[in-house]
Image (cartoon, rainbow, N blue to C red; front, side, top):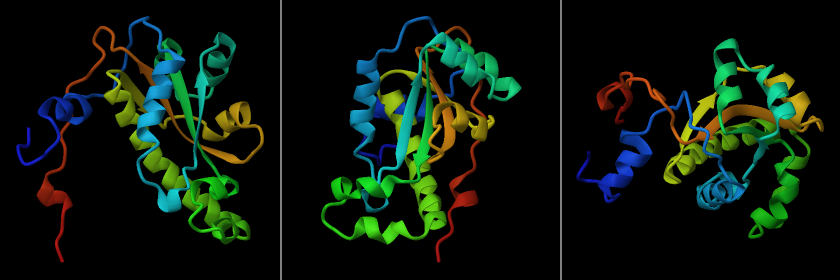
Length: 199
């Protein structure tokens, strides 16, 4: 616990210190209202030019879940099949078409991204990954556990769930209330001195 932080110690524990990736969940369902509350919290976190490129598909149905599981790495299939809710998180590479709404302070924002699709895709992925992290913290803030995964056939998932070809799948996140033996021991973290350099 860090007393220099203004964040309440209980919130520090819930969001970071006691939170772990979940590997099993109870059968308790996760409602659309809970997911909306998570979204309405994390949507306020920053992205470049407020572009908000993250898009999400909630996988609930048995047939859709089976299609998703088939594209997950072997070690992630059981977790994906057994969670109450699974979110597929992707970057919309046509995010610029919403910038008249998301960045109205600069009417020319959309046109900045029209010509260079490769650059637009790169910035979409970079900023959507920020939003993936915010989403995980939002799930934790709701008192739920998250199991983020990137071990998957992302192209296969894109073809299943984003058939327009305009999205890049970044992560799959299982969501629920932690079940029996849901968590593993915390693995080592690098120290401040390992990570931070002052110049």
